[in-house]
Length: 292
Image 1 (cartoon, rainbow, N blue to C red):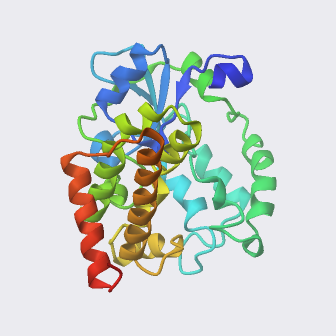
Image 2 (image 1 turned 180 degrees about the vertical axis):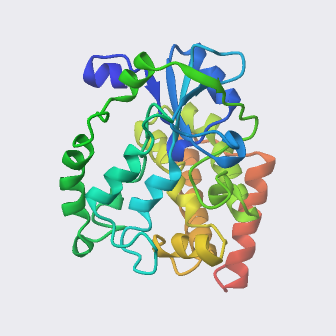
């Protein structure tokens, strides 16, 4: 898609929510990528700094650029937190923190959602003034500059292995996949949508295929998360549903509608053990609510 739209072949891969493991690294290497962005999770780096480049086991030519999650989260989550000991966060102060990597690191990777600026952190917090001033403050330090990921992997060597047998991400305290497939309803929803792949592709209907693709968007599963405490607050803040179960029920209804469209298109009943289980649950829910 990148080559088609922009006429260039990408060198560095960034997965949804920085999801990564060794298997993904091997796949990206086989596809010709030279670098991958990943979460700088403590459970992988241990005592090592995220401000260096690393490589997966057995793949010295594929360079991993870990996120500096502490500095990233200072902007993304703590910027307007008045009880935080770093508040208020000014561009000058943050530039000083970044500059401390000089002599003990090659890069400081700051990765965060676009909606950090204006949604997570509202305009009234001063986030746009901070962002406007930050580049100039960083460049006041003579050892600092800005580089693209491709420039970083061309400039710096790796400093050891980034051995990640289990999946990591930038989500929540666990830095894993539990934000999307951490409970039964999330896993069920994921199984149901993937189960439809063969039936969907057989339709050769662009509209059906596109809707099936959109139903795989990670947000749908994020809304079904049942975590509480600090992570739960974040999930609830960005959730349009009153509960994770409402999100699941809505998803099931839309999925059932998609199945009906597939059957109408192919004149064939969509059947499989998982989908039979899904339809039984949907039927039982309807009977429970007096809809059958």
